[in-house]
Length: 235
Ligand code: ADP
Ligand code: ADP
Image (cartoon, rainbow, N blue to C red; front, side, top):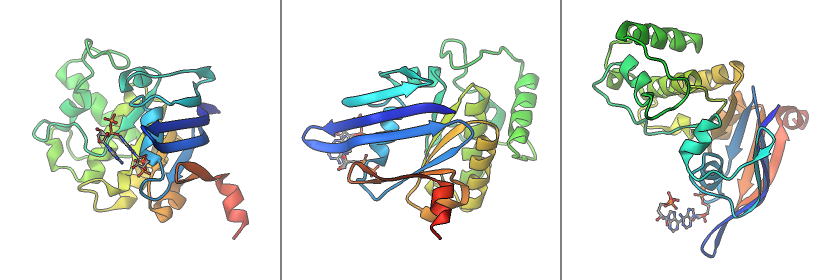
């Protein structure tokens, strides 16, 4: 099912056209890979989807209704979560504390749960296990995890707090990621949990390992927009 849809979207920075006539659909339970060289418009595309920038022309629909988000907060309230490369985590705090960081009522993201420490530890552990992430101990400082593991914790956290679409910006190229396979495994797990995943990468091999749908941008335009089946038929 289509959850996020851009129709004929355009975006310029002054006299630089970053996107022109871009139509892209993100479906739930699918990994949509966005590929393209530097300057192709990948960042601009995800900034629009995540609410950091507004589109100039065309339409942006979420769950069938037109939107124009003024901030990432507004996008998040509609279930669109961006998992940033540089995770805003406090390295010395335990994994479980980072998992719940920013979920306080005043910040109001997702279902607010007033849990005791033991409850938060247990919830963190069980949410991570649902994605297949096995940590020996949720009390260890999050800084002691690998970059890949930290990213996976961030994915589990977004899902727990109600994300329906995850935007992953070059997750396999994030600092501290030694084994891209670890990250790809959790990208697939998020998809299998029913989320729509937007996977930005300039590594076609990584895209092909997990992608269900492929969008290639070139100089701000869509060069290719195809489901996996269409690409594999050409082999
Ligand atoms: P990518 O993420 O694929 O490298 P971008 O979306 O960052 O592509 O960039 C698309 C085009 O828009 C490029 O020509 C880039 O130089 C330009 N651009 C991006 N952000 C800005 C900005 N804030 N101001 C001016 N030009 C920008
Ligand atoms: P924003 O445009 O919302 O400030 P960006 O991350 O796109 O966020 O840009 C950060 C800053 O860097 C901005 O001041 C922007 O003008 C500048 N910038 C980014 N990319 C480019 C570019 N390709 N050409 C010129 N300026 C850029």
